[in-house]
Length: 165
Image (cartoon, rainbow, N blue to C red; front, side, top):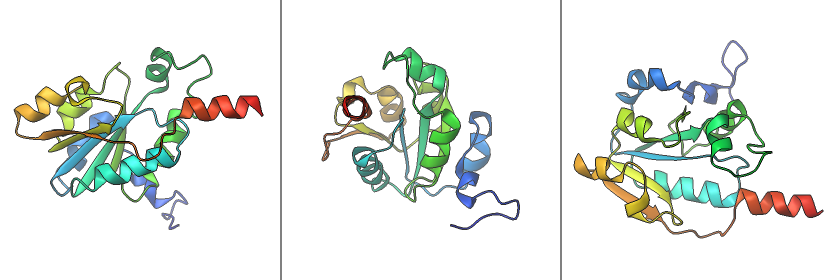
């Protein structure tokens, strides 16, 4: 892994605050894919989905739920396990991810509007008509894709397994 002169890994340059997105989006090749989620404990299902989503375009922005946003989803009092800063760094380290940002709201709609992606992608547990931002993306000529799961895994199931050990 390369490091910058400050000792910070180069991949951390892919972490972009919501207010700075506009400065970086113009540099990304199109078509642009957008996806979002908690990505609390990254597993094979996540990375497979992310690789498949990225294959739908030339670059991809991933927006992560903030810690407060994850807590409001009701996934459990101990969630997220990993802090936003850690989840951002892990996501940025993935080759398929062009930029990673976050949102504190209950939905990623503001980040979707900021990015104006050509493709909005989510996992197969989301029917297209329930994907937040789908009508906006199709309204400007983009498409929304629900990617079928290949690996049936979840962070919740993984945590349940760990707790039983």
